[in-house]
Every structure is written in C-alpha cells, then in structure tokens.
Image 1 (cartoon, helix red, strand yellow):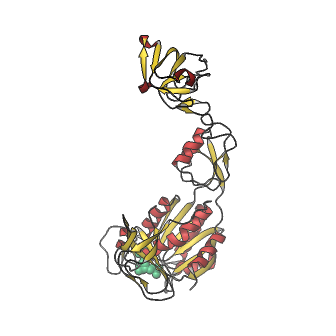
Image 2 (cartoon, helix red, strand yellow; image 1 turned 30 degrees about the vertical axis):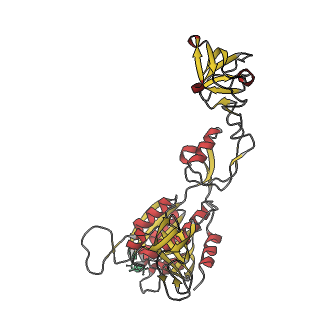
Image 3 (tube, helix red, strand yellow; image 1 turned 30 degrees about the horizontal axis):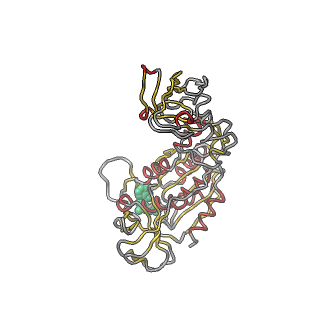
Length: 401
Ligand code: AMP
Ligand code: MG
C-alpha cells in the first residue's frame, strides 16, 4: 500500500493543464482565469452621491437650519457638470455625479423643501464629504481585480462587468467522460434477476462531475468484455479531456478495465492506504488522463473526492484543490482497528453553539452502503489506530461546500 499523499502527488504531476480560451463573461461562471485581469478604468468613474438629497457646500451648512437656493436637478445618468456657488444647492439622486463646487450631500430626509422647490432648508449641520462616493474608491487603473487562477464566482463577474471587460481568458471547462463496467449491472427499472445490481455509480459520478464544475459526458454501461471496454475508452479519450471508469480495477478474474488500460494506456495501479477506496488506477491514454475508480459505490465516490476531483481541478487551473476541512468534536465514539490505513468515516456534521462542529456516524460504513454516504455531510478522517472517543477532536472534510 502507498500513502494517499503519494498517490495524489502522482496524479497532480501527470494531469495536463486544460487549454486556454477567451469566453464571454456570461459563460464564464465557475471557470478559472489564466492571467491577472488588470483594470484600465476608475470605478466609480466620478465622484457621485450615495444618497437622494441635495448637493451642498459644507461651509454653507456649517450652521444649523441654513436655507439654500436650489439651482438645478441632477439624476443618475446626467452629466451634472453645472457648478454651484455660495448659498446654492442642487437636487440630486443616488448615483448622479456630484456637481463641481459641492462637497457634501444633505439626505432628503434631513431637508425641508420651500417655495415650491426653489429653496431648501437643511436640518442641522453636514460635514464635508458626507454622502459622497469618491471616484476610484472601488477600482483604479492598474489594479489587479481578479488574479490568475481564480475560480470566477458571481461577484467576480460583477467586478469584471464594472470595468468594461467583455471576454476573459479562462481554462476550457473540463469534459469528463464517465463509464461503468460490470456484467452484473443493469440500467433499466425492471425487477432484478438474482445476481444483478443496478448501475448507480455512473449517475452519481456524472452528477459529482457537474457539481464540481466540469462538463459530464455519459459514456454508458459497458459489459465485462475487453473489446467493448477498449472501444468505449478509445471513444472517450477522443471526445473528452479526462475519463472516469468505475469498477474492474481490483483483483477479480473479470477486471477487464485493468487489462485494457494496461495494454493501451500508460497506467499506474495503486493500492492506497485508505478505507474505503483502496484500489485505484491512474494514467494517460493518448495523453488523456484516466482515473480507474473502484466499483463499490461508496469507494467510487470517496476515490473521486480524494483523488480524481483534486486532479481534475488542478488541470482546470485551480490552486485550491481540496474541500474545506474543519476540526470537530466526536459526538460519539468513532472506533476502528489499526490496519495501516486512514479511514474516512461518513458522518453527519452539526454546528453546536458551545462545542462548534460535532460529528456522528451517518450510518452503516460498508463500502456498498450508499445510504450513509447520502446522509453524510462530511468524511471524518481517522488516522491509523483505534479511532476516537466521544468528545475527542477529529478532522472532517466537508462534502457540500
Ligand atoms: P468491481 O470493482 O468491478 O470488482 O466491483 C466491486 C463491487 O461494486 C461489486 O459488488 C459490484 O457489483 C459493485 N459495482 C460495480 N460497479 C457498480 C456500479 N456502476 N453501480 C453499482 N455497483 C457497482
Ligand atoms: Mg466488476
């Protein structure tokens, strides 16, 4: 068995980077920037008002209840370039440019309109700068608004739009092909004959790819037949940036995925010191990374989480490859036996006012027991040993951030 870190380092060293391309902002959510994006404009573009009210000169309202002449009205979108002089005010709406000469905004709630709007009385006094958003106090030319290697989230798109960026260079979204293998598997809803198993991994892995930001390509269910497996893998590497296979990588007599990949790919077969998901294969077929995930349903998902997902994110240009891990307190004993492996226990995570995060088993921990995986929000990491007792600290990988 090899340590998990060795397997991960091996994957990360071999997954190729996705090619870069310019995409419209509207299509860029979740993609990763190739270069720093540098602003060439000011945001805001000019001093403008944060309030509806009156633009004034602070020195005119340094004494309470001053009365001023209202000489113009400026709405958002107006140039607002008519200056004001002593004793004058301009009626102004949120977002409109502050007229030259004005240096404070009196909010409308603190004013009284007089003479049909020709004059205004300002309650109290107003300090210079009140209510004004300065040009460039968000972005200045030369600012790196989005660094290289950033996953574009909603607010990044907003920032880029605010500086007039229309397209952005990103790594192309990774197309991940998924196939399941096994003569026992069926994919229709018909009653099962003895020995048959419903194919659940493919659907789950396709969904996991999508929720991790990749494009998922369904390559179907393939029989335990070398020619069929080879044909599907060849079709997959021709059309996808990466492949996930499920099943057929352990020590069984009909593990033909292993035979085919061994022949047509440059693969490494690993037994990793973890439970679940000990068997794992990784390599390249025609330069395309192929992740051979174990067939047991929980193992296939845990293997994806620990090895395939970070590998694919690395190829997608991300620097943050791992889900968040938090330190929690065990809400109950989480026992295990020493076996040289790290155990990843499916747990439900609660946030308790006094204790912070607490974790408890989410159900049966067999690698075929998907219900506990479904009920889990996290994987508690139990290093080799006897596990932890109730109240002990334990690291937990959060699965749904
Ligand atoms: P294998 O890795 O092919 O030896 O399969 C290990 C176990 O996982 C067996 O019990 C299989 O029936 C089961 N299995 C393999 N592939 C799938 C799948 N796509 N959906 C559900 N169970 C599977
Ligand atoms: Mg099989």
